[in-house]
Image (cartoon, rainbow, N blue to C red):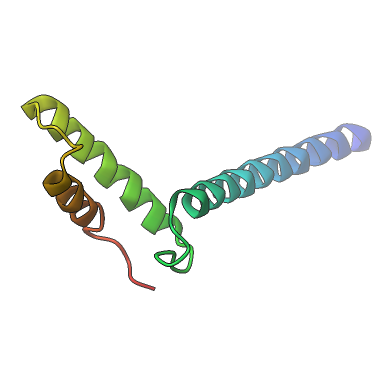
Length: 92
């Protein structure tokens, strides 16, 4: 019986370690993606909520552009899209 309890405890610890490692890996991948996609002069301190808001804003903007048939590649639209991407971001 003691051996069985020890195996269960060991298995639970392995699951916890696995989930923590997956979490840290996901955060590091998000951080790398953010750092590589942002100019060094525009880069602020890393915040996961900041990255989440960036991706959500980009998703919504892309959705609106597709639905309304707006060309995002004009000079006027590029500047406005850049401004819209920054809505709701945390300033660090």
